[in-house]
Length: 116
Image (cartoon, rainbow, N blue to C red):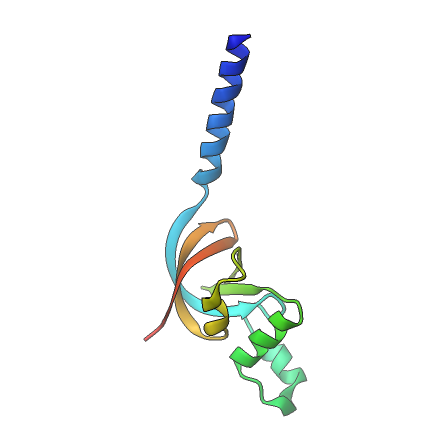
């Protein structure tokens, strides 16, 4: 019986460590956007051309309407895990440097700084 518990404990330990294996802290340059527009706000801007929306206006409007913040870097769209991070709203639609843990197509943002 002790062997069974010891084996289960080892399996749990390796499973727990394996969940960290895919995450990597990275700093990337890109834009804070929204899940409705992704890499380009062009379609939304075309639909609302009379409103003269900026990328920021579009991102905030889409998030307010139920979209999620995303981070676009090198043509790839990353889902943002921590949606309530104030810096996302503060820098919506801007080109920024983002530091965070990346796992697959999701980033947990720890820092956002403006590009100079």
